[in-house]
Amino acid sequence: MAEMTFYFGTMGSGKSTQALQIHHNLSTSGQNGLLLTQLDRAVSAVSSRLGVSEPAIEVGATLDLYRLADDVIAEHGTLEYMVCDEAQFYRPAQVDQLADVVDLLDADVYAFGLLTDFRGVLFEGSARFLEVADHRQELQVEARCWCTRRATHNARLVDGKQVYEGEVVVVGDTGGRDAAGLEPSDDLEVTYELLCRRHWNEARRA
Image 1 (cartoon, rainbow, N blue to C red):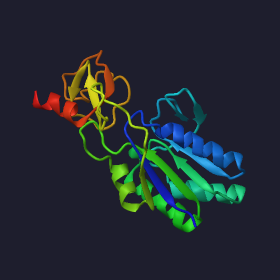
Image 2 (image 1 turned 135 degrees about the vertical axis):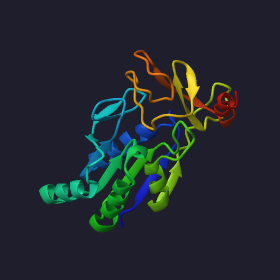
Image 3 (image 1 turned 90 degrees about the vertical axis):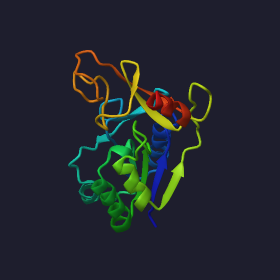
């Protein structure tokens, strides 16, 4: 019986590495499956910070994941699994489509994502996975804050200053957009840093 498992952790906890490992193990055992991602650091690929990457299907906002899986079955006769990286960015409706893949098409779903965004708020996709997944598993590779405490928050820095407002999804340079609650600029640099709760809160208190 197929199941949906949602693996979650902070940046640097090995989500993409484990997604690639599961996909490798299942595909080399002869199973037919799909590797999917959204807004990965590499274009149309799942890439690990360890330097490993694999081509993947890019999950746009309008992609119907159930129809995608059904089309694969129609073409190849079978689909045993789907590995979904950067799953926090999936639409709640797409998470429900993956649940239908499990229940109606009998394919396993392995989803990997962050729990919360730079504001400390659950991503919509992650919230829906927590609600509908058969299993929810926190990754045990613990990333660390600069103070050596366990990192629990993904902080967004704009030109080195931590921010708490702005667009939820900002990848790379903001390109002059006022995406982080600052005055528009042509040279805003957006980076992310892992922090413990104490140091994530410190900038807001200041």
